[in-house]
Image (cartoon, rainbow, N blue to C red; front, side):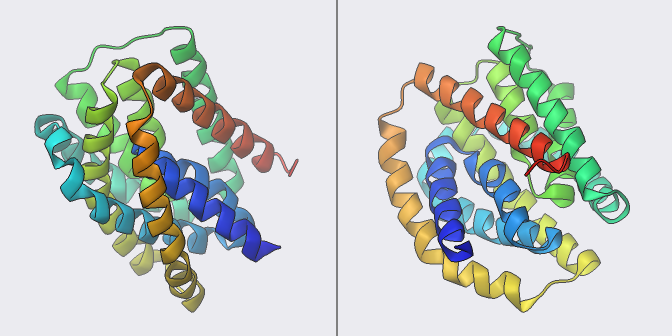
Length: 240
């Protein structure tokens, strides 16, 4: 049963990551936490997300906003060490509860047409938040997704810029996680077994991306965020 669950999680998350630029960590991490120890789930997510970003970067580099990317990277340098401290010191359930409440609150704000103007300072702040969430729970996506959705960023730019950012942040986060939290054979064996599923998801996700218009893309964004927020909240409360 766990093997079947693992296959479904990785395949669906890979399709979403490829088609939207953010789906893998948001969808995969909560479920992987049910199958593995927290640090193992986070590291498997980081490894596979890094592979996906590496495989896609050449195809989407024309969509990258390099000025925004640079500011996100500057912010992440501060957030990455903060995240690993949070991971090592704070109870994982308390952390998941806090993240879930933030995701749900901001998602409802987006659904109610809350909008925010993008500027340089906010780019840096969002990069820092994303960095801290990557090393703490392996989920850099929510701050970026909420920010870009609130600024009405076009789907191509959102996918291209976030994937380029992930390429850096996943690599650095994986090193930090291994150094400070350690690693196991389970992490690397599971990641190798997941590779065929990831590449299948890459192919299917590219097909899906060509068929998603901007309105459908936004609705899919809301659904993923609401699902993740509710799931993390119920899990942190011990209801799952």
